[in-house]
Each structure stands twice: as structure tokens, then as C-alpha cells.
Image (cartoon, rainbow, N blue to C red):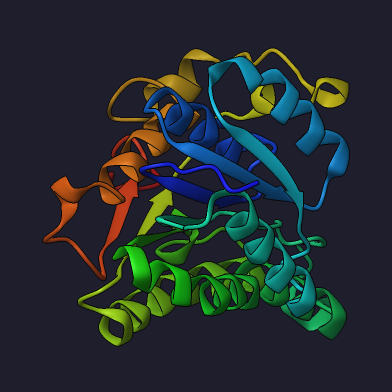
Length: 256
């Protein structure tokens, strides 16, 4: 049965972490939300937890599998008959953090396939539906696209690729579809995990004070920007990478 809605958002990696926070925020804005995730336990738990907030569905998704991506988008259309926003959020960290000379090709490929190729695949299958609604895509990258710690080559490359993919898509898909990117800094998500692994966060004074705003980020900091970027109010914004990191990337650090 197709249910008519003004705005339908598909969020990859929507069952936990930042993606779960985005789903929570968009539901409060009255949107219909499809959370697509590889972790079925987390997806079903989140859909049940948020059921009272609005119209939410869970679909299984492996962003590295083209058929899985195609099916997730198709199921979204089956449910609602339209798609207004794609939030590309699913990703993994560098699995090994190995020195580059020890980083295996398999480990490299796994990160790139999930964090970058997965965004391409989701865009590919969402675009025909987004064209019909003059919709929007928001890609979640990272401040690691702009700065690095040692031994994070695969992760940094994947996030930098997302920023470049964003402006490429914006040029290719405009004016019907706007495409933007958000690069989060330290966002605390331990309390946004599934129940089996959920923790209560604790932050030291140093954790807080190293951020110019005086605190660590929370998922709502990202979700509010997602909601803005997919709204008509952001109609003149496309191809941009918006850094949300409490000012950390603007802080000059010298070792005394």
C-alpha cells in the first residue's frame, strides 16, 4: 500500500549513531523516514523505538552490493510512491589503522567500497525518483577529508572522495536535484547505538575545552543541518561541504 507524504527521506546507516539521530530529527519535522542499514537488529529496534514519533520503516541494505541498493530504493518507492531526500550516511572506519606499508588491499577496498562507492550506488538508484520531486541529496563525510591522524589513509581518502563526489553530482544533477555534504567533527554517538552496545558518554574537561564551542558534538548538530539542506530554504545551496566540528578545524595547534 502506497502512503502519500509531503517529504520522504531515505537514510543509509540510519539505525545507529548519526544516522539514527537524523532519523529522529526528521520524524519530529513530520517527514516519513526509511532507515536502511546492514544491521537488522539495530534497524528493527530503531524502527520500533521511533514508531510513536511518526511514519518510519526499516529496510535491509548493504551499500557495497548494487542489487541490495537497488532493492532498498525500490522498497522505499513501494512504501511511499516518492522520494524527496537521500541522506548518504552509511560508513565504516579504517578497520586496521595500519601503517601504509602494512595496509592490505582488501582493507583499503573495503573502506572505499563502503564509504565512497556505496554513496555513488545509492545516488545512482535514487536520482530518477529525486528528479521527479526536485529532491536533494546530503552526503555525510568527515573532517578527516580535511585533516588526518597517522595511519588513516583509507578512511581519509574515502571521506575526501565524498566531498569531491558531492560537487560533481551537484553539477551533473542540477537544477532538479541539489547535492550537499556535511563534514562532522567529534560527534558523540555511544548513546545512539543499539541497546546491546549502548553506553552513557562521559567527557573530560579537556574533551570539552579543546572545542572552541566548549563541548563535544551530538547527532542533533548534524541532523539540524540535514533538515535545512533538504528544505526549500536551502534552495540556493548546492555543491557545498559544510563543516560542523565545534570549530576544531580552525584551531591552530603548536607543540610547545
